[in-house]
Amino acid sequence: MNANLKRRHFLRISAGALTGIALSPAPFSAESDPSKSRKRSIRKAIMYATIGLKGSVLEKFKALKEAGFEGVEPMGGMGREEVLKAFADTGLKAASVCCHTHWDKPLSDPDAAVRESGLEGLKTSLRDAKTYGASSVLLVPGVARKGVTYKECWERSIAEIRKAIPVAEETGVKIAIENVWNDFITKPEEGDRYLNEIHSPWVGWHFDVGNVGRYSPAEKWIPILGKRILKLHIKEYSTKLMAEQGPGAGFHVKFLEGTNDWPAIMKELDKIGYSGWGIAEQDGGNTPEGLHDLAQRMDKILAS
Image (cartoon, rainbow, N blue to C red):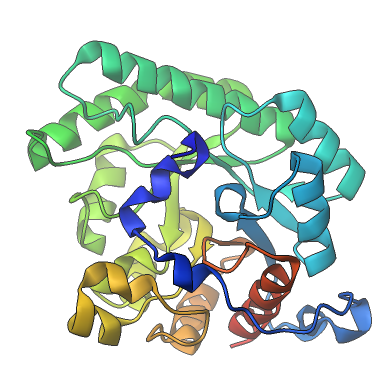
């Protein structure tokens, strides 16, 4: 599996869900851009690791621009010069950077050497983010399984994150904890307590709307995490499919075809004054037509 896709391996998305997008490939123009009438100032971006198109970084960035995206979330550890050139040539902005080591070398690992390697990956991602002009790095803090208890994950990850805070301060880039399926922080109150224990203005939250679907409605998390939400991953989930086929099946839906209550989610984001980036981490980016579809469905979500 490509290293850039490691963090998504837990989703187990079927190949069939990645294809079959039916949408006219007509060029995306300002006149047809629903974002011009958006209710709120949340800008559209996409996670680089979800783009299934073949080609160079620049070719992929060009396809994103044509589809109507305004930004992209690259992985840490990519070739900086190539990524910088792609940003410069397309005018896209860096919405965030995703740490590239947090799944293979988690900060919760029992082996101190593995934790050290993971910490270096986080530091590299922070420096990448500064280079690209991103204000935060997405971090999966740890994994509470395979012999690692919840308590151990909590304590080890916090200890390692604190070691990275000086680099966050140096670069001016914040660390944004993401809620994922790592058997860790499955309730918003736990996320609140985790951030409170770290107690640093350089550590906030990267809220994944879809990942919480199996646990509780996304709109219940937002008031508790509040203004500590630094970035959003926009992702659909279906509790109906989860009940019928299992948790992983909940992701086998397009934007607006799951059970996310987008108007309620947007209402809660408005209440905390969220503005900035909404980053798609969603199937469908394997073709130019699929990227168009994702971008236009996101416009509808953001106008909910």
